[in-house]
Amino acid sequence: MTILILGSGGREHTFAWKISQSPLCNKLFVAPGNSGTAEIAENVAIGVTDFEAIKTLVLDKKIDMVVVGPEDPLVKGVHDFFLNDEQLKHVAVIGPEKAAAELEGSKEFAKEFLFRHNIPTAAYKSFNASNVEEGYAFLETLTAPYVLKADGLAAGKGVLILNDLDEAKAELKAMLVDSKFGAASTKVVIEEFLDGIELSCFVLTDGKNYKVLPTAKDYKRIGEGDTGLNTGGMGAVSPVPFATDEFLEKIETRIVKPTIEGLLKDNLPYKGFVFIGLIKVGDDPMVIEYNVRMGDPETEVVLPRLKNDLVELLQAVANGTLNEIDLVIDERAATTVMTVSGGYPEAYEKGKEITGLENIEDSIPFHAGADLKDGKVLTTGGRVLAMTSYGNTYQEAIKKSYQNIEKLHFDKMYYRKDIGFDL
Image (tube, rainbow, N blue to C red):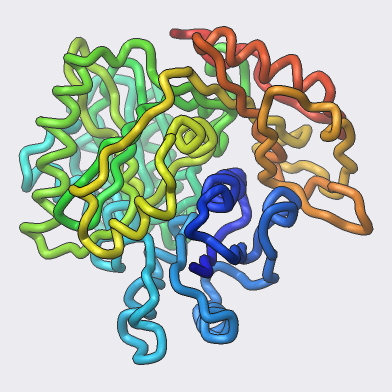
């Protein structure tokens, strides 16, 4: 098969690394890709939402399958674009159709789905600029901390957790009236705060059958001890030590099953990955959010633990035969630590040369915000490179990741030295 991956981050490099190991894949393209994917696939300088350019590439290179990495093309309907085009509709697209992608595209849509199918989640109400006063009144009925979520896609930055009521009211106004997050915050969901420890559950589905992939826990804050601003993710650990068999059983029966059945009942066509952001409250799992693709940096620890041929799995998703495959999971733990540009998640400089990659041993460096220029690997983004390692325990794995990060250098490189600290 000839396969195209859409995206340019650490998640897409991990997909390319895993797909390139399959004997079923004879040619692999990544659009737009990065310096990591360039080593194992052919990068094509096309934006992930430039559907016409993607079509030209697919026809020109006789591509059989498109694996969609990020959420943007899914929410904008890339799967539907293929289905509605006579020349493209035979191409397998891994990722939900537009109607189902609203699970990530709209926080309100996701909450309504959760309530409709009796899936455990926090109580909520949604507001817009016309009823902002009602929003203030609703905040007054809650106890701190207050959770405000921009309804639309805000690049992972649209969720605020505030301890002060007046500040929460001011931020609600900033989001709804002053368009703090642009179009993403024309509607805001306010929900009760859930106190517990978070984890991520990943599910692969063909629309009726599903497979639960390894769990992971990621670390969103820039500072050690989970302090400071939210980022796209500073590291991840898989499996999650506190997710016992009993707890995983609760996740599957109370959340995964009703989610897949709910998609069917609501006629939301879904072939791809479901990311379920969970929180463990007491001994019970509750849903914080859905994403309609794999998470980043969780992909960098989940896919390396999958022993199956990924292309075979994705073919089964496309054909609706996922029930015929048994998942084989590596017993070892996997951890990843993200190195980022100094200043991230606020302003940072780009174009810094990354050195030391050739010295890495016993870890897999997944490139994220990095690209090749004149034979040098340069930084192009905030999150630069994820260092993934295996170990018999997550402590052993994390030690390897840190040992190898010490061999890397780029100007103002930063990383958290406490990934896994709370486990």
